[in-house]
Amino acid sequence: MQNDNGITLLALLTGAAIGAGIGILYAPDKGIETRHKIRRKVEDTSHDIAERVSHAKDELTKTANEQKDAFDRKLDEAISTMSYKADDIIDKLEQKLEDLKAKNAQLQK
Image (cartoon, rainbow, N blue to C red; front, side, top):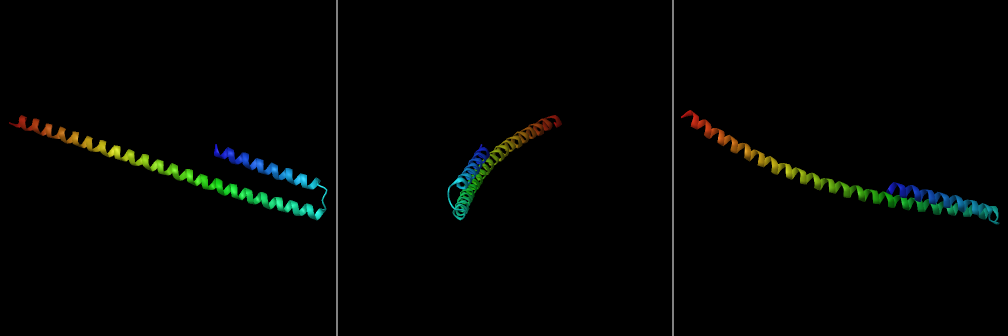
């Protein structure tokens, strides 16, 4: 979803830059003034794109960190649950062993 937003934003910015460039070329200004306008538009658009890419990068990093934290929490919960179950299994096995020892002791009498 975020990738689609980035692509749409880039397409809009590219279209705006092309439209502005064509508009400037057809404007009734002198050549040097037109070139200065084009240069300013390119610089403004480049700066805007750089800001948006930086913002997208920050958002992606934030989302990745949130997902990592969520994964770490779930992993800790799973390990805790498995540890509890392992202790439960060990307790049951020890009880079975005691029962078998008691039965064996009765049989040996």
